[in-house]
Image 1 (cartoon, rainbow, N blue to C red):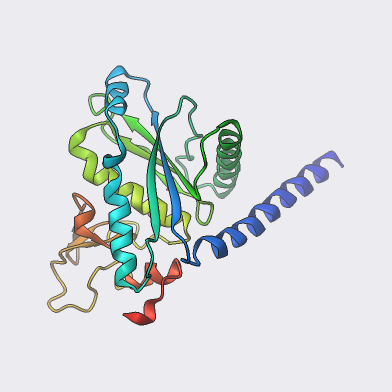
Image 2 (image 1 turned 90 degrees about the horizontal axis):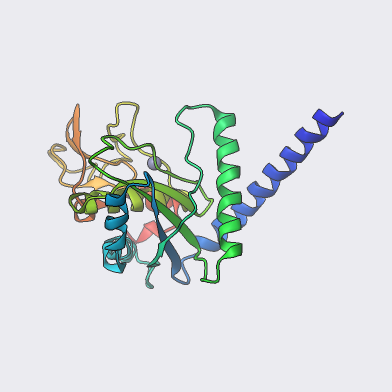
Length: 257
Ligand SMILES: [Zn+2]
């Protein structure tokens, strides 16, 4: 009996989350007012080099994300600024990291923990919480060669980004932050198991001749297609666009195109 009750409670929580997300999605993709995106920094590895990097972070380290999304939104005919990005400084508590495996249950469990963590953080904070909250966890390049996955909750309006605490990664960190932010609005990944952008939806210019090499990455395709078998990471958001499929997923007016 107790077990059945536990399942019932879990089901009710999931139902509540699903309804909440559907409402969020309607509210955040109406594009009649700018969405407030708030970014927080976390020291992911506890190293002092990472601390020093975070000490030097300021609003302009994230400006490119706002400029990128607003530029792309205008291209689709959104007449206002789509987003307003602000850097809200450093947090002491750490968001729960997404599971490394593919287990659906583990992922559901993690997404609930992450939601609870973010809700509690907002509750305990005096600062205004944004429409979208992104938590960037930084790692020292001297001891971390590869980062854990970043994850934006699809429609959940919160995301965790694992990033390198190094100036030379500023541009690519911005690309990852923008990608996860798009997830929180309901955009889906457009690359395959080999990390190659899927044709046509993961391409910036899918109908250009010749098709290769492309000059930009589509934000959810992730990489710039060089040939049918090769793609490279964009260095910064200047090499990225928001394609028509992604635009449709976040409810931008694509008929203007
Ligand atoms: Zn993704």
